[in-house]
Length: 546
Figure 1: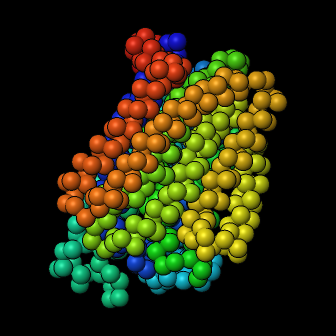
Figure 2: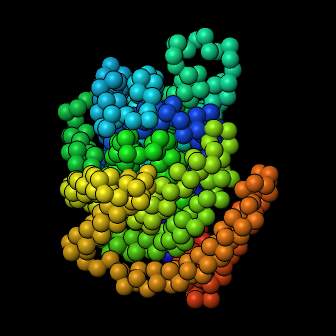
Figure 3: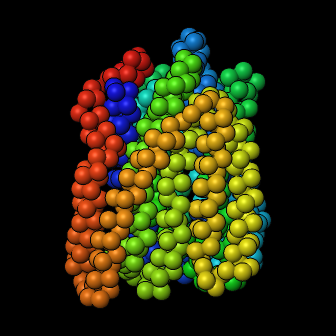
Protein backbone atom coordinates (compact mmCIF):
# COMPACT_ATOMS: atom_id res chain seq x y z
CA UNK A 1 0.00 0.00 0.00
CA UNK A 2 2.83 2.42 0.82
CA UNK A 3 4.47 1.85 -2.58
CA UNK A 4 1.19 2.48 -4.39
CA UNK A 5 0.62 5.51 -2.23
CA UNK A 6 4.07 6.87 -3.08
CA UNK A 7 3.36 6.41 -6.79
CA UNK A 8 0.01 8.18 -6.47
CA UNK A 9 1.49 11.03 -4.45
CA UNK A 10 4.38 11.51 -6.87
CA UNK A 11 2.04 11.27 -9.86
CA UNK A 12 -0.38 13.70 -8.23
CA UNK A 13 2.39 16.26 -7.72
CA UNK A 14 3.41 15.86 -11.36
CA UNK A 15 -0.24 16.16 -12.36
CA UNK A 16 -0.65 19.50 -10.60
CA UNK A 17 2.47 20.84 -12.30
CA UNK A 18 1.40 19.34 -15.62
CA UNK A 19 -2.01 20.98 -15.34
CA UNK A 20 -0.31 24.33 -14.81
CA UNK A 21 1.86 23.55 -17.82
CA UNK A 22 -1.19 22.60 -19.88
CA UNK A 23 -2.91 25.84 -18.93
CA UNK A 24 0.18 27.73 -20.08
CA UNK A 25 0.22 25.51 -23.16
CA UNK A 26 -3.39 26.41 -23.85
CA UNK A 27 -2.59 30.11 -23.53
CA UNK A 28 0.33 29.54 -25.88
CA UNK A 29 -1.85 27.73 -28.42
CA UNK A 30 -4.55 30.36 -28.05
CA UNK A 31 -2.00 33.03 -28.91
CA UNK A 32 -0.90 31.01 -31.94
CA UNK A 33 -4.51 30.50 -33.02
CA UNK A 34 -5.29 34.19 -32.42
CA UNK A 35 -2.34 35.35 -34.52
CA UNK A 36 -2.40 32.72 -37.26
CA UNK A 37 -5.78 30.91 -37.13
CA UNK A 38 -5.83 27.96 -39.54
CA UNK A 39 -4.26 29.97 -42.35
CA UNK A 40 -1.47 28.69 -44.63
CA UNK A 41 0.97 30.58 -42.37
CA UNK A 42 -0.36 28.58 -39.39
CA UNK A 43 0.16 25.33 -41.27
CA UNK A 44 3.73 26.44 -42.11
CA UNK A 45 4.51 27.25 -38.48
CA UNK A 46 3.02 24.00 -37.13
CA UNK A 47 4.83 21.98 -39.78
CA UNK A 48 8.18 23.63 -38.93
CA UNK A 49 7.50 23.14 -35.22
CA UNK A 50 6.50 19.47 -35.52
CA UNK A 51 9.59 18.28 -37.39
CA UNK A 52 12.24 19.21 -34.78
CA UNK A 53 9.76 18.19 -32.07
CA UNK A 54 9.86 14.67 -33.46
CA UNK A 55 13.66 14.72 -33.75
CA UNK A 56 14.07 15.97 -30.18
CA UNK A 57 11.83 13.17 -28.88
CA UNK A 58 13.66 10.55 -30.90
CA UNK A 59 16.93 11.92 -29.56
CA UNK A 60 15.96 12.36 -25.96
CA UNK A 61 12.48 12.46 -24.49
CA UNK A 62 11.47 8.92 -25.37
CA UNK A 63 14.25 6.54 -26.25
CA UNK A 64 17.07 8.02 -24.18
CA UNK A 65 15.05 8.04 -20.96
CA UNK A 66 13.90 4.49 -21.58
CA UNK A 67 17.47 3.34 -22.21
CA UNK A 68 19.23 5.42 -19.56
CA UNK A 69 17.03 5.08 -16.46
CA UNK A 70 17.16 1.25 -16.09
CA UNK A 71 20.96 1.20 -16.51
CA UNK A 72 21.58 4.22 -14.29
CA UNK A 73 19.33 2.95 -11.47
CA UNK A 74 21.05 -0.44 -11.66
CA UNK A 75 24.46 1.25 -11.42
CA UNK A 76 23.33 3.26 -8.39
CA UNK A 77 22.53 0.01 -6.62
CA UNK A 78 25.56 -2.03 -7.66
CA UNK A 79 28.44 0.38 -8.36
CA UNK A 80 30.19 3.30 -6.62
CA UNK A 81 28.25 6.55 -6.79
CA UNK A 82 31.15 8.39 -8.44
CA UNK A 83 31.15 5.92 -11.32
CA UNK A 84 27.40 6.38 -11.84
CA UNK A 85 27.73 10.16 -11.84
CA UNK A 86 30.55 9.94 -14.37
CA UNK A 87 28.22 7.95 -16.66
CA UNK A 88 25.59 10.70 -16.36
CA UNK A 89 28.13 13.39 -17.33
CA UNK A 90 29.30 11.41 -20.32
CA UNK A 91 25.74 10.83 -21.52
CA UNK A 92 25.11 14.59 -21.30
CA UNK A 93 28.18 15.54 -23.31
CA UNK A 94 27.83 12.73 -25.86
CA UNK A 95 24.22 13.80 -26.37
CA UNK A 96 25.38 17.40 -26.91
CA UNK A 97 27.74 16.32 -29.68
CA UNK A 98 25.11 14.21 -31.45
CA UNK A 99 22.32 16.75 -31.07
CA UNK A 100 24.61 19.54 -32.31
CA UNK A 101 25.28 17.61 -35.51
CA UNK A 102 21.56 16.86 -35.99
CA UNK A 103 20.67 20.53 -35.46
CA UNK A 104 23.29 21.73 -37.92
CA UNK A 105 22.08 19.29 -40.59
CA UNK A 106 18.48 20.33 -39.98
CA UNK A 107 19.31 24.00 -40.53
CA UNK A 108 21.55 23.44 -43.57
CA UNK A 109 19.13 21.09 -45.31
CA UNK A 110 15.94 22.79 -44.14
CA UNK A 111 14.52 22.95 -47.65
CA UNK A 112 15.03 19.22 -48.19
CA UNK A 113 13.57 18.40 -44.77
CA UNK A 114 10.41 20.38 -45.47
CA UNK A 115 10.17 18.83 -48.92
CA UNK A 116 10.27 15.33 -47.43
CA UNK A 117 7.58 16.10 -44.87
CA UNK A 118 5.27 17.83 -47.33
CA UNK A 119 4.84 14.55 -49.13
CA UNK A 120 1.93 15.67 -51.30
CA UNK A 121 3.27 18.99 -52.53
CA UNK A 122 2.43 21.18 -49.56
CA UNK A 123 -1.11 22.05 -50.63
CA UNK A 124 -2.39 24.91 -48.48
CA UNK A 125 1.02 25.39 -46.82
CA UNK A 126 3.25 28.50 -47.21
CA UNK A 127 6.20 26.39 -48.34
CA UNK A 128 8.96 29.02 -48.30
CA UNK A 129 7.80 30.27 -44.92
CA UNK A 130 7.94 26.72 -43.53
CA UNK A 131 11.55 26.39 -44.74
CA UNK A 132 12.58 29.68 -43.08
CA UNK A 133 10.78 28.93 -39.81
CA UNK A 134 12.34 25.48 -39.69
CA UNK A 135 15.81 27.09 -39.79
CA UNK A 136 14.90 29.24 -36.78
CA UNK A 137 13.29 26.45 -34.75
CA UNK A 138 15.51 23.45 -35.51
CA UNK A 139 18.39 24.34 -33.12
CA UNK A 140 15.94 23.81 -30.24
CA UNK A 141 16.72 20.11 -30.72
CA UNK A 142 19.98 20.69 -28.81
CA UNK A 143 18.40 22.25 -25.74
CA UNK A 144 15.32 20.06 -25.44
CA UNK A 145 17.39 16.93 -26.01
CA UNK A 146 19.73 17.94 -23.19
CA UNK A 147 16.69 18.78 -21.05
CA UNK A 148 15.42 15.25 -21.63
CA UNK A 149 18.77 13.79 -20.52
CA UNK A 150 18.71 15.99 -17.41
CA UNK A 151 15.14 14.86 -16.67
CA UNK A 152 16.13 11.19 -17.00
CA UNK A 153 18.97 11.72 -14.50
CA UNK A 154 16.75 13.52 -11.98
CA UNK A 155 13.93 10.97 -12.40
CA UNK A 156 16.41 8.19 -11.62
CA UNK A 157 16.83 9.88 -8.22
CA UNK A 158 13.03 10.01 -7.94
CA UNK A 159 13.07 13.79 -8.36
CA UNK A 160 10.16 14.47 -10.69
CA UNK A 161 8.67 17.88 -10.05
CA UNK A 162 11.35 20.14 -11.54
CA UNK A 163 11.56 18.16 -14.77
CA UNK A 164 7.78 18.12 -15.01
CA UNK A 165 7.77 21.93 -14.61
CA UNK A 166 10.19 22.67 -17.48
CA UNK A 167 7.40 22.90 -20.13
CA UNK A 168 5.97 25.81 -18.12
CA UNK A 169 9.10 27.84 -18.88
CA UNK A 170 8.89 26.84 -22.53
CA UNK A 171 5.23 27.87 -22.82
CA UNK A 172 5.80 31.17 -21.03
CA UNK A 173 8.65 32.04 -23.39
CA UNK A 174 6.45 31.44 -26.46
CA UNK A 175 3.65 33.50 -24.89
CA UNK A 176 6.01 36.42 -24.20
CA UNK A 177 7.37 36.33 -27.74
CA UNK A 178 3.83 36.14 -29.14
CA UNK A 179 3.18 39.63 -27.79
CA UNK A 180 6.20 40.96 -29.66
CA UNK A 181 4.46 39.74 -32.82
CA UNK A 182 2.19 42.79 -32.74
CA UNK A 183 4.97 45.26 -31.95
CA UNK A 184 5.31 46.95 -35.34
CA UNK A 185 8.74 48.59 -34.80
CA UNK A 186 10.25 45.07 -34.78
CA UNK A 187 8.94 44.37 -38.28
CA UNK A 188 12.01 45.96 -39.93
CA UNK A 189 14.23 43.39 -38.19
CA UNK A 190 12.43 40.51 -39.92
CA UNK A 191 13.56 39.55 -43.44
CA UNK A 192 11.21 40.82 -46.13
CA UNK A 193 8.43 38.43 -47.00
CA UNK A 194 8.30 36.74 -43.59
CA UNK A 195 5.33 37.56 -41.34
CA UNK A 196 6.36 39.00 -37.97
CA UNK A 197 3.90 36.84 -35.92
CA UNK A 198 5.27 33.55 -37.25
CA UNK A 199 8.91 34.61 -36.80
CA UNK A 200 8.28 35.85 -33.25
CA UNK A 201 6.64 32.55 -32.31
CA UNK A 202 9.55 30.61 -33.79
CA UNK A 203 12.05 32.62 -31.72
CA UNK A 204 9.92 31.96 -28.65
CA UNK A 205 10.19 28.21 -29.30
CA UNK A 206 13.98 28.45 -29.48
CA UNK A 207 14.36 30.52 -26.28
CA UNK A 208 11.85 28.38 -24.40
CA UNK A 209 13.77 25.24 -25.33
CA UNK A 210 16.97 26.70 -23.90
CA UNK A 211 15.15 27.52 -20.65
CA UNK A 212 13.97 23.91 -20.31
CA UNK A 213 17.55 22.74 -19.95
CA UNK A 214 18.90 25.73 -18.05
CA UNK A 215 16.49 25.48 -15.11
CA UNK A 216 17.59 21.88 -14.43
CA UNK A 217 21.33 22.56 -14.32
CA UNK A 218 21.40 23.65 -10.62
CA UNK A 219 19.47 20.51 -9.58
CA UNK A 220 21.95 18.34 -11.47
CA UNK A 221 24.84 20.05 -9.72
CA UNK A 222 23.27 19.40 -6.31
CA UNK A 223 23.11 15.69 -7.14
CA UNK A 224 26.79 15.70 -8.11
CA UNK A 225 26.33 15.84 -11.89
CA UNK A 226 28.42 18.82 -13.00
CA UNK A 227 28.89 20.15 -16.54
CA UNK A 228 32.60 19.30 -16.59
CA UNK A 229 33.38 18.21 -20.19
CA UNK A 230 33.47 14.43 -20.53
CA UNK A 231 32.93 13.18 -24.08
CA UNK A 232 33.50 9.44 -24.32
CA UNK A 233 31.60 7.27 -26.78
CA UNK A 234 33.65 4.17 -25.90
CA UNK A 235 32.52 4.02 -22.26
CA UNK A 236 30.83 0.68 -21.48
CA UNK A 237 27.83 2.33 -19.86
CA UNK A 238 27.41 4.73 -22.77
CA UNK A 239 27.54 1.81 -25.20
CA UNK A 240 24.89 -0.07 -23.21
CA UNK A 241 22.62 2.97 -23.28
CA UNK A 242 23.26 3.33 -27.01
CA UNK A 243 22.40 -0.31 -27.68
CA UNK A 244 19.11 0.05 -25.84
CA UNK A 245 18.39 3.45 -27.35
CA UNK A 246 18.80 2.26 -30.94
CA UNK A 247 15.66 0.10 -31.09
CA UNK A 248 14.01 2.39 -28.55
CA UNK A 249 13.87 5.13 -31.19
CA UNK A 250 10.83 3.34 -32.57
CA UNK A 251 9.41 1.71 -29.46
CA UNK A 252 9.38 4.83 -27.30
CA UNK A 253 8.36 7.28 -30.01
CA UNK A 254 5.78 5.46 -32.13
CA UNK A 255 3.21 7.81 -30.64
CA UNK A 256 5.01 10.91 -31.91
CA UNK A 257 5.92 9.38 -35.27
CA UNK A 258 2.30 8.46 -35.90
CA UNK A 259 1.26 12.05 -35.31
CA UNK A 260 3.94 13.28 -37.72
CA UNK A 261 2.70 10.82 -40.33
CA UNK A 262 -0.73 12.34 -39.84
CA UNK A 263 0.79 15.77 -40.50
CA UNK A 264 2.31 14.49 -43.74
CA UNK A 265 -1.02 13.10 -44.96
CA UNK A 266 -2.80 16.29 -43.85
CA UNK A 267 -0.85 18.20 -46.53
CA UNK A 268 -2.63 16.24 -49.27
CA UNK A 269 -4.56 18.34 -51.84
CA UNK A 270 -7.62 16.30 -50.86
CA UNK A 271 -7.49 17.67 -47.34
CA UNK A 272 -9.14 21.03 -46.58
CA UNK A 273 -6.93 24.06 -45.97
CA UNK A 274 -6.00 24.33 -42.31
CA UNK A 275 -5.89 20.57 -41.71
CA UNK A 276 -2.38 20.63 -40.25
CA UNK A 277 -3.23 23.34 -37.71
CA UNK A 278 -6.59 21.74 -36.81
CA UNK A 279 -4.97 18.36 -36.17
CA UNK A 280 -2.34 20.03 -33.99
CA UNK A 281 -4.90 21.84 -31.85
CA UNK A 282 -7.08 18.70 -31.55
CA UNK A 283 -4.05 16.71 -30.42
CA UNK A 284 -3.20 19.39 -27.86
CA UNK A 285 -6.69 19.13 -26.38
CA UNK A 286 -6.34 15.37 -26.11
CA UNK A 287 -2.90 15.83 -24.55
CA UNK A 288 -4.52 17.93 -21.82
CA UNK A 289 -6.07 14.72 -20.48
CA UNK A 290 -3.29 12.34 -21.50
CA UNK A 291 -0.55 14.44 -19.94
CA UNK A 292 -2.51 15.24 -16.81
CA UNK A 293 -2.29 11.80 -15.23
CA UNK A 294 -1.33 8.98 -17.63
CA UNK A 295 2.08 10.42 -18.48
CA UNK A 296 2.54 11.50 -14.86
CA UNK A 297 2.10 7.93 -13.63
CA UNK A 298 4.31 6.65 -16.44
CA UNK A 299 7.06 9.06 -15.37
CA UNK A 300 6.98 7.63 -11.84
CA UNK A 301 6.60 4.03 -12.97
CA UNK A 302 9.78 3.67 -15.05
CA UNK A 303 12.34 4.28 -12.25
CA UNK A 304 10.12 2.39 -9.77
CA UNK A 305 9.80 -0.63 -12.05
CA UNK A 306 13.49 -0.44 -12.89
CA UNK A 307 14.33 -0.82 -9.19
CA UNK A 308 11.89 -3.76 -8.97
CA UNK A 309 13.35 -5.43 -12.07
CA UNK A 310 16.91 -4.97 -10.74
CA UNK A 311 15.78 -6.76 -7.57
CA UNK A 312 14.02 -9.52 -9.58
CA UNK A 313 10.62 -8.60 -8.11
CA UNK A 314 8.51 -9.15 -11.24
CA UNK A 315 5.26 -9.95 -9.43
CA UNK A 316 5.27 -6.59 -7.67
CA UNK A 317 6.05 -4.91 -10.98
CA UNK A 318 3.04 -6.56 -12.63
CA UNK A 319 0.82 -5.51 -9.73
CA UNK A 320 1.99 -1.94 -10.23
CA UNK A 321 0.95 -2.14 -13.89
CA UNK A 322 -2.49 -3.55 -13.05
CA UNK A 323 -3.04 -0.85 -10.45
CA UNK A 324 -1.84 1.97 -12.72
CA UNK A 325 -3.86 0.86 -15.74
CA UNK A 326 -7.08 0.72 -13.72
CA UNK A 327 -6.49 4.15 -12.17
CA UNK A 328 -5.69 5.72 -15.53
CA UNK A 329 -8.66 4.05 -17.26
CA UNK A 330 -10.91 5.47 -14.55
CA UNK A 331 -9.88 8.93 -15.79
CA UNK A 332 -9.31 8.53 -19.53
CA UNK A 333 -12.40 6.54 -20.55
CA UNK A 334 -14.93 9.15 -19.38
CA UNK A 335 -12.60 11.93 -20.54
CA UNK A 336 -12.56 10.49 -24.07
CA UNK A 337 -16.35 10.35 -24.22
CA UNK A 338 -16.64 13.85 -22.77
CA UNK A 339 -14.24 15.27 -25.36
CA UNK A 340 -16.21 13.66 -28.19
CA UNK A 341 -19.60 14.90 -27.00
CA UNK A 342 -18.54 18.38 -25.90
CA UNK A 343 -15.95 19.01 -28.59
CA UNK A 344 -17.86 21.92 -30.14
CA UNK A 345 -18.42 23.93 -26.93
CA UNK A 346 -14.87 23.22 -25.70
CA UNK A 347 -13.20 24.45 -28.88
CA UNK A 348 -15.51 27.45 -29.17
CA UNK A 349 -14.70 28.60 -25.64
CA UNK A 350 -10.97 27.89 -25.78
CA UNK A 351 -10.00 28.90 -29.31
CA UNK A 352 -12.73 30.65 -31.33
CA UNK A 353 -11.18 34.11 -31.24
CA UNK A 354 -9.41 36.37 -33.74
CA UNK A 355 -8.40 34.47 -36.88
CA UNK A 356 -9.81 31.23 -35.44
CA UNK A 357 -13.37 31.42 -36.81
CA UNK A 358 -16.36 29.03 -36.90
CA UNK A 359 -14.85 27.14 -39.84
CA UNK A 360 -11.70 26.51 -37.80
CA UNK A 361 -13.81 25.24 -34.89
CA UNK A 362 -15.67 22.78 -37.12
CA UNK A 363 -12.43 21.54 -38.67
CA UNK A 364 -10.76 21.04 -35.28
CA UNK A 365 -13.85 19.40 -33.76
CA UNK A 366 -13.87 16.80 -36.52
CA UNK A 367 -10.25 15.84 -35.80
CA UNK A 368 -10.85 15.79 -32.04
CA UNK A 369 -13.54 13.11 -32.36
CA UNK A 370 -11.10 10.63 -33.85
CA UNK A 371 -8.22 11.49 -31.53
CA UNK A 372 -10.53 11.09 -28.52
CA UNK A 373 -11.46 7.58 -29.64
CA UNK A 374 -7.87 6.52 -29.03
CA UNK A 375 -7.31 8.35 -25.75
CA UNK A 376 -7.57 5.25 -23.48
CA UNK A 377 -5.16 3.38 -25.77
CA UNK A 378 -2.64 6.23 -25.84
CA UNK A 379 -2.72 6.29 -22.04
CA UNK A 380 -2.31 2.50 -21.80
CA UNK A 381 0.71 2.67 -24.12
CA UNK A 382 2.42 5.04 -21.68
CA UNK A 383 1.98 2.41 -18.97
CA UNK A 384 2.95 -0.81 -20.72
CA UNK A 385 6.16 0.41 -22.36
CA UNK A 386 7.87 1.07 -18.97
CA UNK A 387 7.30 -2.64 -18.24
CA UNK A 388 9.57 -3.53 -21.15
CA UNK A 389 12.11 -0.77 -20.57
CA UNK A 390 12.51 -1.62 -16.89
CA UNK A 391 13.66 -5.09 -17.96
CA UNK A 392 16.08 -3.43 -20.46
CA UNK A 393 14.05 -4.72 -23.41
CA UNK A 394 13.61 -1.98 -26.00
CA UNK A 395 13.69 -4.33 -28.98
CA UNK A 396 10.19 -5.75 -28.58
CA UNK A 397 8.40 -2.35 -28.50
CA UNK A 398 10.58 -1.32 -31.45
CA UNK A 399 9.60 -4.33 -33.55
CA UNK A 400 5.91 -3.92 -32.77
CA UNK A 401 6.22 -0.18 -33.31
CA UNK A 402 7.66 -0.71 -36.78
CA UNK A 403 4.65 -2.83 -37.72
CA UNK A 404 2.31 -0.20 -36.31
CA UNK A 405 3.99 2.54 -38.33
CA UNK A 406 3.43 0.49 -41.47
CA UNK A 407 -0.20 -0.03 -40.45
CA UNK A 408 -0.59 3.70 -39.85
CA UNK A 409 0.69 4.52 -43.34
CA UNK A 410 -1.60 1.88 -44.86
CA UNK A 411 -4.66 3.14 -42.97
CA UNK A 412 -3.94 6.76 -43.86
CA UNK A 413 -3.55 5.85 -47.52
CA UNK A 414 -6.75 3.79 -47.40
CA UNK A 415 -8.78 6.56 -45.76
CA UNK A 416 -7.33 9.19 -48.09
CA UNK A 417 -8.22 7.11 -51.15
CA UNK A 418 -11.72 5.97 -50.21
CA UNK A 419 -13.07 7.84 -47.16
CA UNK A 420 -11.68 11.37 -47.27
CA UNK A 421 -15.10 12.85 -48.09
CA UNK A 422 -16.68 11.22 -45.03
CA UNK A 423 -13.78 11.53 -42.56
CA UNK A 424 -12.05 14.60 -44.05
CA UNK A 425 -9.20 15.88 -41.88
CA UNK A 426 -10.05 13.30 -39.19
CA UNK A 427 -8.50 10.41 -41.13
CA UNK A 428 -4.94 10.83 -39.73
CA UNK A 429 -6.39 10.95 -36.21
CA UNK A 430 -8.48 7.82 -36.78
CA UNK A 431 -5.49 5.92 -38.17
CA UNK A 432 -3.39 6.86 -35.13
CA UNK A 433 -6.13 5.78 -32.71
CA UNK A 434 -6.60 2.38 -34.36
CA UNK A 435 -2.85 1.75 -34.31
CA UNK A 436 -2.65 2.72 -30.63
CA UNK A 437 -5.17 0.02 -29.68
CA UNK A 438 -3.39 -2.57 -31.83
CA UNK A 439 0.00 -1.62 -30.40
CA UNK A 440 -1.16 -1.93 -26.79
CA UNK A 441 -2.92 -5.24 -27.39
CA UNK A 442 0.13 -6.86 -28.98
CA UNK A 443 2.53 -5.61 -26.29
CA UNK A 444 0.14 -6.73 -23.54
CA UNK A 445 -0.16 -10.30 -24.81
CA UNK A 446 3.56 -10.65 -25.53
CA UNK A 447 4.50 -9.55 -22.00
CA UNK A 448 1.84 -11.83 -20.55
CA UNK A 449 3.19 -14.79 -22.52
CA UNK A 450 6.72 -14.14 -21.22
CA UNK A 451 6.11 -13.20 -17.61
CA UNK A 452 2.68 -14.54 -16.66
CA UNK A 453 -0.72 -13.04 -16.06
CA UNK A 454 -1.17 -9.29 -15.81
CA UNK A 455 -4.55 -9.19 -14.04
CA UNK A 456 -6.68 -9.04 -17.21
CA UNK A 457 -9.82 -10.26 -15.44
CA UNK A 458 -9.52 -7.66 -12.71
CA UNK A 459 -8.92 -4.98 -15.35
CA UNK A 460 -11.94 -6.15 -17.38
CA UNK A 461 -14.22 -6.00 -14.33
CA UNK A 462 -13.05 -2.49 -13.59
CA UNK A 463 -13.51 -1.35 -17.19
CA UNK A 464 -17.07 -2.73 -17.22
CA UNK A 465 -17.99 -0.59 -14.19
CA UNK A 466 -16.18 2.40 -15.65
CA UNK A 467 -18.14 1.96 -18.90
CA UNK A 468 -21.47 1.91 -17.02
CA UNK A 469 -20.59 5.12 -15.17
CA UNK A 470 -19.41 6.70 -18.41
CA UNK A 471 -22.72 5.95 -20.16
CA UNK A 472 -24.61 7.85 -17.46
CA UNK A 473 -22.18 10.74 -17.75
CA UNK A 474 -22.50 10.67 -21.55
CA UNK A 475 -26.29 11.10 -21.31
CA UNK A 476 -25.79 14.27 -19.27
CA UNK A 477 -23.11 15.60 -21.64
CA UNK A 478 -25.24 14.84 -24.72
CA UNK A 479 -28.26 16.64 -23.25
CA UNK A 480 -26.08 19.59 -22.31
CA UNK A 481 -24.58 19.82 -25.80
CA UNK A 482 -28.09 19.81 -27.34
CA UNK A 483 -29.12 22.59 -24.97
CA UNK A 484 -25.95 24.50 -25.91
CA UNK A 485 -26.90 24.42 -29.58
CA UNK A 486 -30.61 25.04 -28.99
CA UNK A 487 -29.93 28.09 -26.83
CA UNK A 488 -27.21 29.29 -29.24
CA UNK A 489 -24.81 29.69 -26.32
CA UNK A 490 -21.93 30.24 -28.74
CA UNK A 491 -23.45 33.63 -29.57
CA UNK A 492 -23.35 34.81 -25.95
CA UNK A 493 -20.44 36.76 -24.37
CA UNK A 494 -17.34 34.76 -23.47
CA UNK A 495 -18.03 34.87 -19.73
CA UNK A 496 -21.44 33.27 -20.26
CA UNK A 497 -19.96 30.57 -22.47
CA UNK A 498 -17.22 29.80 -19.95
CA UNK A 499 -19.72 29.58 -17.09
CA UNK A 500 -22.07 27.35 -19.11
CA UNK A 501 -19.27 25.00 -20.16
CA UNK A 502 -17.85 24.75 -16.63
CA UNK A 503 -21.30 24.03 -15.22
CA UNK A 504 -21.91 21.34 -17.82
CA UNK A 505 -18.55 19.64 -17.17
CA UNK A 506 -18.97 19.77 -13.38
CA UNK A 507 -22.45 18.25 -13.63
CA UNK A 508 -21.24 15.43 -15.90
CA UNK A 509 -18.27 14.67 -13.63
CA UNK A 510 -20.52 14.68 -10.54
CA UNK A 511 -22.84 12.12 -12.17
CA UNK A 512 -19.86 9.94 -13.09
CA UNK A 513 -18.30 10.01 -9.61
CA UNK A 514 -21.64 9.57 -7.91
CA UNK A 515 -22.46 6.43 -9.88
CA UNK A 516 -18.89 5.17 -9.38
CA UNK A 517 -19.44 5.42 -5.65
CA UNK A 518 -22.80 3.61 -5.87
CA UNK A 519 -21.22 0.81 -7.92
CA UNK A 520 -18.29 0.71 -5.49
CA UNK A 521 -15.73 1.15 -8.22
CA UNK A 522 -12.44 -0.19 -6.91
CA UNK A 523 -10.45 2.67 -8.43
CA UNK A 524 -12.36 5.45 -6.67
CA UNK A 525 -12.08 3.73 -3.29
CA UNK A 526 -8.46 2.73 -3.87
CA UNK A 527 -7.45 6.20 -4.93
CA UNK A 528 -8.94 7.85 -1.84
CA UNK A 529 -7.67 5.12 0.51
CA UNK A 530 -4.12 5.19 -0.79
CA UNK A 531 -3.84 8.95 -0.58
CA UNK A 532 -4.93 8.74 3.07
CA UNK A 533 -2.54 5.95 3.99
CA UNK A 534 0.48 7.05 1.99
CA UNK A 535 3.19 8.57 4.16
CA UNK A 536 5.99 10.85 2.93
CA UNK A 537 9.22 8.98 2.28
CA UNK A 538 7.45 5.61 2.30
CA UNK A 539 9.76 3.97 -0.21
CA UNK A 540 12.84 2.44 1.36
CA UNK A 541 15.40 3.84 -1.02
CA UNK A 542 18.01 6.32 0.17
CA UNK A 543 18.01 8.12 -3.16
CA UNK A 544 14.28 8.72 -2.87
CA UNK A 545 14.33 10.16 0.62
CA UNK A 546 17.45 12.24 -0.01
